[in-house]
Image (tube, rainbow, N blue to C red; front, side, top):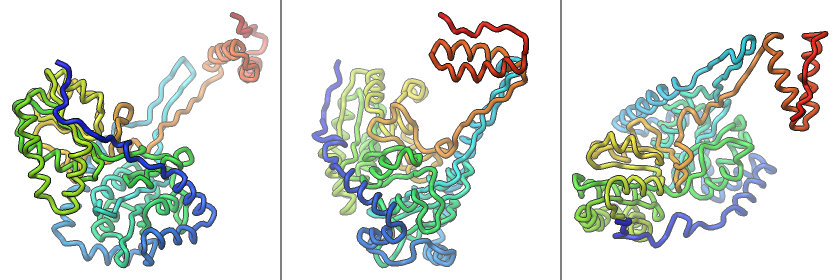
Length: 435
């Protein structure tokens, strides 16, 4: 049968997208021109905070002292998991070299960025996990200088747990500034910071637009939209757990899509029955977000079989993909488009969001079709090098001269000619490039 929508979204992530580009561009332009003073003016306007911008060692120690030991232990547990996973990822990138032809050696080097700016949201929720995810991976990658930037709260400053997590993860500086002004400060090297080579981390639509505009002069992890999650479930799934997992992701925001794809009508109907009660039981703000997300953006899709379910999932290319179905190895082999995959009910997106070790900065809005999430690889560039003996240079020079002339690039051809003339005087070469 064709896929059947038991619940269809009335909105998409793009429905309510407002044009913030002009506003963000104006702020960036003013801060680039006005420097520290302009950034401070926007901080006063938007953050409504007049405390220290760059936290001192004393500020960090004072904030850390406010964090309960049990929470410190949990942060350390999450940090250790993320660090060890990142270290394993790093082993997959190595320096290599190969003798292409006798006498011609080419290679690659893996070099970390010099400076990274890690944005840690701190408005509606204190994103302690984002500090861990972004700073830890940069540290493992070998980035020389890491700035963690997070919005301060009026009269309070950055949430103490965020300060503690960023410091534990290895941030060299912690910047109490949010929004576009925080992104600009890291990009332009304000307040004595080095200019960031790469910006990473989630943020609201203004932060995302700032990263989009600045991409090119700095690297970015990705341009992120609202978080999204999809669950693939068959008749063996626990409807209550499926519903709970959907609601847990819907609380991110009013426009955070959650999708259930199944081949079992009874399961789908049971989940749809359970979800409203689970949402009603959430705290106020979480309930408000989840209610809107479920009402406007959620979908429940009934498919004929698991192959159709997998095809639907690949079409949606979710940021988070959960499988609660039989034969998990089949799904692992079959599925192709997702940011991070959670196999079986024994794991959940919430684990990945907070503490299991994989990164929670992931591609949204179907960008998982072409990219993965944040990892040590995002902070590292693969560069190439080559060297040759004169004999090794000979066949490459001949081929280069002929290809260049065929393309009409005479200057390139002559760069090869002069080497052949110098290294092999008296030899005749056919370097015409004629077809």
